[in-house]
Image (cartoon, rainbow, N blue to C red; front, side):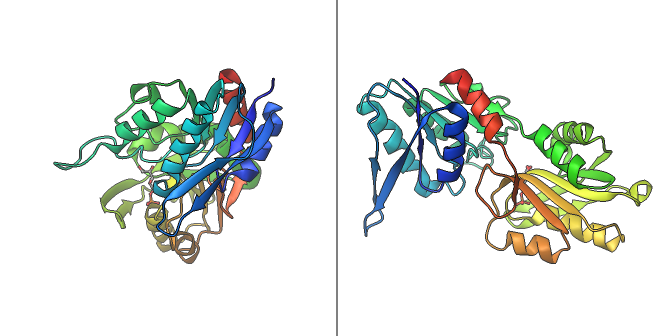
Length: 294
Ligand code: R5P
């Protein structure tokens, strides 16, 4: 019997494409919100004996997380044989240590709770830093697929003579991979973040790449401050208009407008989070990984 792909609200488009790739049926999990903001999940299909693939991107996670736990638990209670989760964007991965006394290490507790309710997980480029692999925090099989080759292909096809600029030293390996795929040189910014919206970047010497189009690349565009800082330096140095390319289009309020106001000529993201800048399709990557686990 084939699997059923079930979309949590907001994930219907991607779930539809994934169901086609996986030759699976398609269902939804509706969420009723009560006046007191409690939520009630209702599955619209018979899951008994079936392999279920839940699709839920977890940007702005807090209102989505409890309904997801309810959907996964209910799916099991109603007799599904396996329950997997495709979460193209996995939240909370950045809070991977106690930076200040008394703080929660959210990445670990988030991973523990998900591991309790699903049999496997697939995601795209989780922001792993001090935690090196999903297996270090998830006790259930978890695959992270990488969008670097897709970003590289998009840049090679859409940008004339690019030079890539990555956000910080930590990202150098990732940026170099995208640059190699796009057959382009790369640089990385020096970055200091002292608050959610307080980011200072400095740009290395660009003179030898004056005739190239700067492409700012990052795994996450959130407040947009990293890219805005870089765009301001580029404008001050008279560089060509820049392109911004990101994997996860988190876009906090005002971020997109700020990028445009700072001179971004074009902004493109992957469809891990539905957004008007989506131009890079990760569905085939997600489906390939899920096929290994279904
Ligand atoms: C940080 O380590 C990430 O790679 C991104 O550079 C960061 O999340 C971007 O955030 P923002 O858009 O808020 O500057």
